[in-house]
Length: 211
Image (cartoon, rainbow, N blue to C red):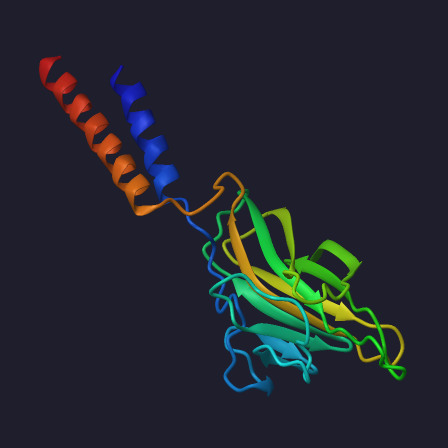
């Protein structure tokens, strides 16, 4: 009986400690507006970060409340970051928002970028055309599952456009969570979980004293 109770305590403790992997700067907050270095990401060749501006690369679509910045990849290029805090063999869900610059009426360079997502150098999805959502629609929401092969993995968003066209991919709200965890527990839920663990531990102690 004691072993079963201990197993239950450990199981609940494990669920309580399950957390999202480390994604540095998930919303691509800019060091400078426009082209340039985006903290936490390696971008090549024409990449940067933006707030909404109808005259620049982010000219359509709205983000959820609290998100104000996007990363952009113009023409062919990529954003790369390192995911830390992974458990090898654990299934994780990668989620992000994507969109593309609306080039309607641009007779010169209208193009739809295609996105390929890679984890640990292996293709997770794509290449997938990313259409502009148009105002006032939300960015498109994407999620993909992968199995961690190590405690850290390289995440890469690779954008390509045909020929010399001027397609621009937009990204934001990048998160990685264990596939079994639907959402981050609210503080009240964490308190209940902690109470349950303490209660189970107390029961173990009482049974141990009586035995």
